[in-house]
Image (tube, rainbow, N blue to C red; front, side, top):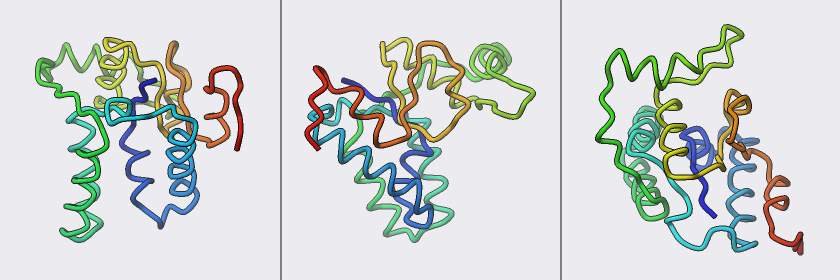
Amino acid sequence: MRFFTDSNFIIALNNPRESDRNKKANEILKRLNKYGLIRNKFELVITNLILAEVMNLILKKRTLPAAKRIFQEIISNFQIIEVSDIKINKESFEQYCCQYWNPSGRTLGLTDGITLFIMRSKGIGLLLSFEEAFDSIAGIRRLSEPDEIEELIPGGNRNK
């Protein structure tokens, strides 16, 4: 099973100050491992755009040694898909961002739109994220609560 991972999930994993999200993110990963839903780094997926987004935020709020440690953890535990063949121009902005714009304020950004494109092209329908705007996207299941992991277990094996 493959899980695309949003930047806000990775930030939450590494930010104890966001105590509720930090606890949820760590418990989700713990359960994914416990139930054998992730067995190697190829099952947790990000893009190089998400890596850059995460590291930009980490570098603004943490020390350089902490940022280096987090960077090493990310590259050791996630499959990183290089987004190199997507040109960022007016057409791609329309394709990847504007189609998800929502006047109510629950809007996905350009990186999110590219994430959805990559997820669909790689056949990944599961997303670890705290961003509620993904909930309106057909074919994508956002996971943000530890109890949602049990629903993914084949045959209902829920030995906690």
